[in-house]
Length: 358
Image 1 (cartoon, helix red, strand yellow):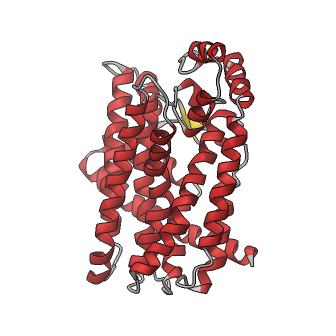
Image 2 (cartoon, one colour):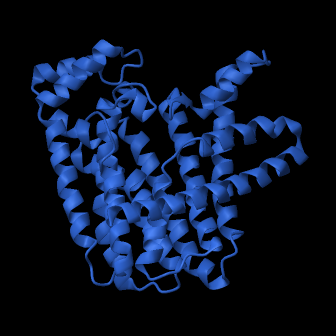
Image 3 (cartoon, helix red, strand yellow):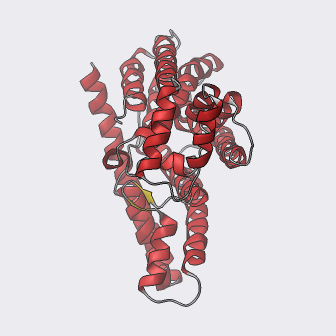
């Protein structure tokens, strides 16, 4: 059953890829009618979006659609594909705010345009050019996500049903992003604050809201179904982000596409760090303050912080929290109000969201 669900989700992923490629091809052609100087914009974005990505959010939306008993159509595929453009907006702006050099093993968008400025010996300040390009390209991705949804070919009723959820999801995402950068300004860590950031910055827009969007597109949504999908989606969304927190500290760069310990270098006050802080002695906190958030943090410093985190039991605690949240999602997937055809899909998505390699 799992292999069938995996194959079904792969088919959705392939269909989403096709629609994204068509859409971006049309947008690239349009941009070039404005100016040939916009070609690097469309080329960079197309590479950024199509060269990699799990398409988890469209897959969750599809699972929500099936949960309501929907039969998939091309307009629905286009509509759920729009979630990848929103995700691209979030990633581009997130990398810029974090000062990340890489994304998925390649230069982040702001670094890419900074390199173009240097290579072509353009006038002005290369980092400022990269920053401006990333802000605008992230904004463009946000516009494109709405554009693809609106031109997907949905009925007026489908658009009416999905638009409020789509709007709420974007507000939640931006709220979570601000809470994330605001957290870095605080003098103390706080587990409740870090948990809320994980939920809004990533969990809800990755799992819960895409499920709701899929259900809304079916035309057969009910409040009971939405509640059931939330009961499944919220714990799974948290588990997804907690796995991401572990990967950001202990992940293999060949797997994550980002430098080892990148979250430590950026001073990310994640749930993992909040757990570690609560278990540190005074001397351990002194060591942590020396290295955590240091822009020039090297491999030795990363290893010292990793050892500190492990010694506090935070890594083990977070793994336990992921397991507990995973079991909550597993139980919720068995709800009677969810169409039985969606059950194997929901189980497969739990694996995709929580079992990523370190």
